[in-house]
Image 1 (cartoon, helix red, strand yellow):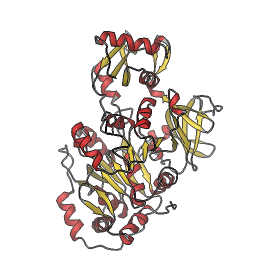
Image 2: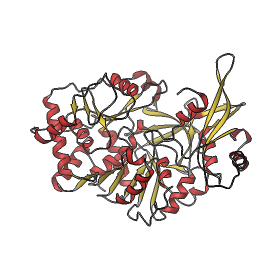
Image 3: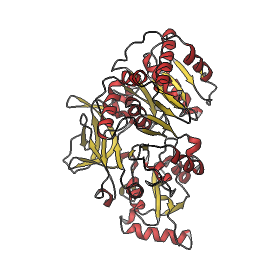
Image 4: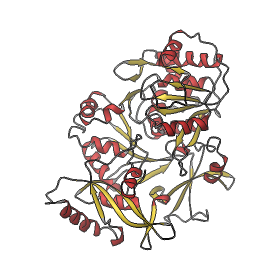
Length: 508
């Protein structure tokens, strides 16, 4: 596929050369012509308002109207902040206070007495149908395209502004290295407030593809989900591994019933080998990609297609670098280590954000200068081997138990290899010492078990511990096991480790 030089121009071109081509299928066919006209009308309205060039907050879910709202904001010179309508009131207001948006567009009801919508869905539809279109400026490469707020260690969300140059680097790479054809049908399951959604959104729109939404009310209801999936006619699947793990519970989620589904793209969290094996068995001729990248580096910067060799290990590689990107593996003194040695992953390149939104202190911590270039400190641990990057876990998920330093995600990966375990998440249970410092007391594993013949949970636990003990050191075997039907997920589709930790440690 050809290299894109301007995202807005490329998307608009489909509205002109193929106006009846469908860009969004939510049971109603929304065309590229409709997207072009509605985004231009909104951009014209916003320009006439003479707003400050602050970002525009857009609150909603997976509705078509979100798309012309995003593009209309960008065409009028504003970055947009996508907000999921069910965002808790406290978090929503923290984002609002930081962003100080020029305008709030609300396509759904939301929880806040402090924030007032400047435009609701009725207002927006009036603009979409009646506003006179005026000449629109070209969108500069350095203009913020979107700002996604991620969780901060202090509890205060951090805004990550991604400009058009960053986004072009990502989109061109995905189209070149991951996509097989243009005009494909992409799953749109991740909320727009999660940057995984960008893996579907803009590659689909610049290539004449169609976004097919799978809304939360469907994904939360297994019966509805499994009825809906075969009707979507998807070509490209984009999700977290946790979401596809749920789909694999359904025996008809396979190549026989979904023959048109030929490409799987995973990002957002670690891809367990056990899940990869199940998916490969269900879709033996599909291309299945593992990718990796923090929000600060625009969705993903590595990719690798699964092969039988990778499935023999305990962990999957996270991939080969995209060609315009550089990664250093460094020690605690920020000195580059030798190939094969572990260290923190640092990322530099045109898809790396310039810093956090109006937060110089956090920017200084995370975006550092080395050899005349800006590198983002991921706090992820990994190593290179033969050009492949391997992930070894979060540095902030390392704990010390009885003097031994261990990685919680490492325990998860090994638990996932146990024959009696379908999926698992391990957390640390803490105790407070007399000096007020929290110390790790024991490991607690939340486990979704495979069907088994164990006579009790006690005997099941003993069998799991025995098999796990053959894979890991004794101190890595959790003391307590709690059995669940499914692991809880965050709204972004990742395993909700925070809520599980709160369960064993109290609080939230």
